[in-house]
Image 1 (cartoon, rainbow, N blue to C red):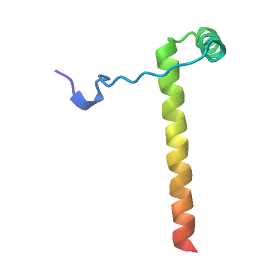
Image 2: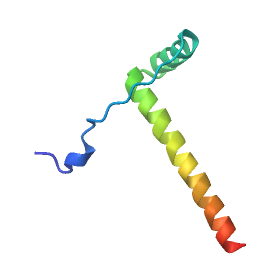
Image 3: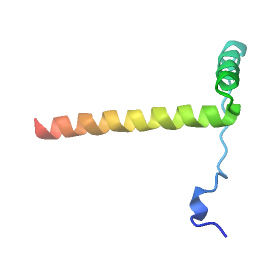
Length: 65
């Protein structure tokens, strides 16, 4: 039915925000015209990619030293 069944988003995680954090995220989602969950997923994946790239560069720098 699906080309890649592992791409179906079935994995859930609970993240709790205080009222101020929630207000910032909601305002950003409204400004961009996105659903809040989609915005949070995009932010998390962007940050995870950046962390992995940074660590990969750090590992390569140490290997070359």
